[in-house]
Image (tube, rainbow, N blue to C red; front, side, top):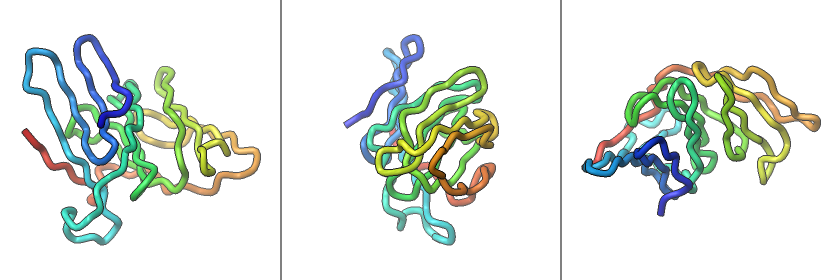
Length: 156
């Protein structure tokens, strides 16, 4: 089952409830990628539990499209294409639905329903530009480029 799609012109991009990222334009075969985000030190990605996107909505930003998994091994990332990672960042908090303005990605974060804070991230680097967390949010890991713990498996 697919979550809320990102529709750009005639192109449809969406995350599944589990680990699939798909992109389709009418008249093409479409593209499907399975994403794995192993825990640090996992030698073989195929031994990692699949992602659990839960149909998380994508957001188009200046660097590509923003996607996140806040369930299994939580992370946020931006891809410029289906298999071209721009940046990736491990996270500790639950996330809300993303929104974008210019070069910033905004999302609610923290707590069971992601209502403890709102954060603004630089869409090109993943760096936190600001956060408003009146009751605290905790420190998050710093962004990293092309984490060795990230992999994709292409499907036809």
